[in-house]
Image (tube, rainbow, N blue to C red; front, side, top):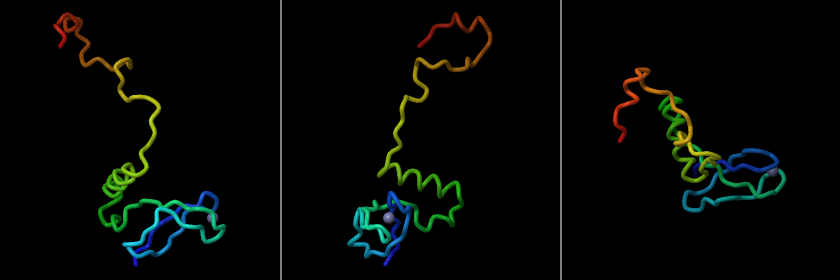
Length: 95
Ligand SMILES: [Zn+2]
């Protein structure tokens, strides 16, 4: 049976074995019996190298636990560095 990680809000992450067909989304903590949610982590990706494993792990985790953003990156109001310093380029037509 594969190992799965669960995170207790009080005690932290612990591992538990479950059959693949019966993996619960949460289970009681071993120490305090509080509900511990399952943690989605890349399994067996360490052989890929840390950068690739991190990228795959981030992509997998974001499907289940998307990061919350407070602003739109590169929003139109934000100032971006000009590509050119030539003042004649400012007179060119814009799309
Ligand atoms: Zn606990």
